Length: 307
Image (tube, rainbow, N blue to C red):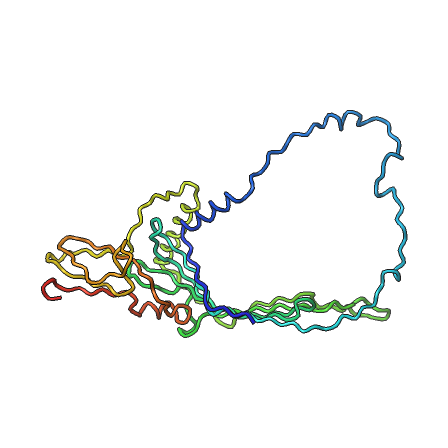
């Protein structure tokens, strides 16, 4: 049995361009076709030649082989083979943004479990997969479902079954007055007992448009790597008096190697914050719609004289 806990894949335009650049550098360059001198081959094309100079396959005589010479009656021992694979969580996030500071726009979560038996003889495999897709609504700063949960409780489920059948002789015998339809050599079944509910809104179409634009620019060879990184969070003091800002342990001042404590912020000044090292959360165990209700990032504000 092969068990895997969780996998997280973050794909952004700059990562895509980096991978494409590496692949282009590693792939061998195509060699130019050297022009062959065919003048010697066509010089005596219509000349008379003896047939004995040719050794073509259709002019040769093959030695006959009796069928009993290569026949061997080998009893193949039956071996039971079984393998099970369980992946508790797979998360794929598509991000767009400026440089390395990107915002997740589309997120897919899935679980997988499958078994395969007798893969060297008559293979039989069965798999079960769940799927849940969300898009990020930047207007309201919340995740909204694209492929919704079934009845709001469990993710959409898909089942796959593959089976190899033994080869049987279905030729007609003398006296048969009907046609026997042989079994298929390989059977593949894909089914789902759940209805897939896909929500399409103006916000989701905007997300798709931003993803298409961002990845098309990222795949171009003229991608600008000199883009300045921007902070994912910016706090601006517009209240007119000095204040104090205290981020929680998951946030820190941008560029600071350590987690930040209480920061003084005068009137009109701005404070740029970035992600600090986060402890493993409940990713893969709860839906993103449930996780966004938890307080992973908090800020505490107070007047300078009353903090």
